[in-house]
Amino acid sequence: MSHIGKPPCDEGAILHGAPVSPCTAAARRWTLVAAIVGSSMAFIDGTVANVALPAIQRDLNASASEAQWVIESYALFLAALLLVGGALGDRLGRRRVFMVGVGFFTAASVACALSVSANQLIIARAVQGVGAALLVPGSLSLISGAFPKRERGRAIGTWSGFSGIAAAVGPVVGGFLIDHYDWTWAFLVNVPFGVVLLTLCAFKVPESRSVSAAQRVDGQGALLATLGLAGIVYAFIEAPALGWAAAAVVIAALVGAGGLMLFVYVEARSRSPMLPLKLFRKRNFAGANLLTLLLYAALGGGLYFLPLNLIQVQHYGATAAGAALLPFIAIMFLLSRWAGKLTDTLGSKIPLVAGPAIAAVGFASFALPSVGGSYWMTFFPAVCILGLGMAVTVAPLTTTVMNAVDSDLAGVASGVNNAVSRAAALLAIAVFGLVMAGAFDATLGRSLSSVHAPAEVLNALQDQRHKLAAIDIPRGVDEPTASAVKQVVGQAFVAGFRRVMLLCAALATLSALSAWLLIEGKPRRW
Image 1: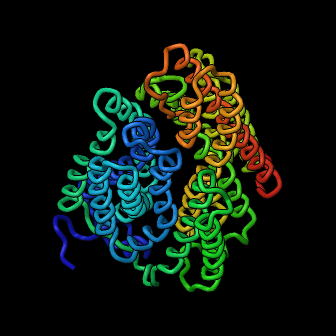
Image 2: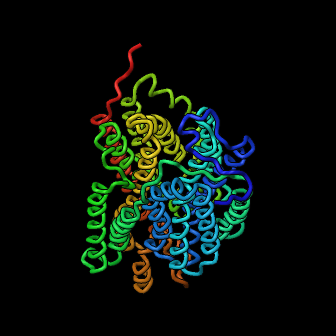
Image 3: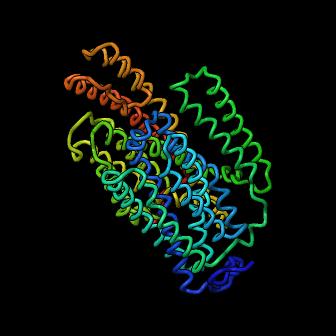
């Protein structure tokens, strides 16, 4: 195969004991830059979309379920195809698949910005998710293919540090663009980075592939995973509006459950499964992934509703909402090295029990604020406690996953754990949406009875309850009534938000309990 620019890197040379990678030093540097930019695009987009959601919901007149699908369509294809994306890169060429992912992601970003309806945006976000599934695993595999083992740790550390900075800065920059321009810029900002990245890959990044990736790609498993997750997510998102007895909801739930059961059946019998079930026979690996499922369900599901609360109820600007989680990221960044040493000194079990337990306190603290109040006295303490809990958890969790399997399966184990965390958030947003809708409807129905307004106004508000806090007050309503309605709607959303956060706290507590029961990380004796 011909290559533009630098010669290909053959991982076989590294795997079979060659002292250095055939990539030149310059090629390695450019590969690292490409990996950082590529993964940062995906990380930033995932967080900025949440901050943009209130503006999207307002401008496109979207319901709460449509707003969920804007996030979930992206997360669905990313979670379902993540492992296949990594396998395709190993088999067909990491640079090639990475560039395809960048191309899909960039083109879909333009489509997102040009969307004039919620359905168009949802479809464009789904394509973005496909691109991200090729892009995200490709960023690390490019580094693995270009750098020899003795330099790989430093390269991955550099990638991780810059990715963390991007995750911190991205929501703030995205919020600024939304506040001062338009939500479409939250997607258009990807375009120049995508163009530069494609050019860089074409001329400066060498090709690489794994010589051990001769087995077929598990397309059947990927299809069943996508079908199963899509069915379950559809059922939970649409049930509040359609009802559980609706034919579409029942069929989706059955298709989803059947798809996931078939997925497990097929993976158990496949010669080259995307999800090697044999790994779960190892107690630490199974325990770490159960912890991941529970804790990241709480994190992904809970933080989906935080920007909606801050912007639609607390009336923060998008920039301020984007900056609200900066202490969380700063704490994780500053404590990352210290947390990484915890497993060496204490073993895995103690940090993986203590971290989620602290996170549970953080989630419960989010349930305390009502409407109004200073950020520093309301959400800031909760953000800091949650950040501390996650900082204590993440590095020991990663170490536990990697140490639970043989070294030749470390990449597969890491990919599985990543996919579990994304699937957990995907399912949690759908389930938590049902919890939020139930609490919101009940509170709104009780509270509107105390508002002195014409019957047609009250009926118009009830008809819009599917929008949650984005309810539009009918025209012609006098200022005192409009103010009372805003207060009632805000309190109804807070009631649902509190229930969601207490559910998150319960999940985090269960994740700590799972670590206590399943992780075999006894403290070392010195």
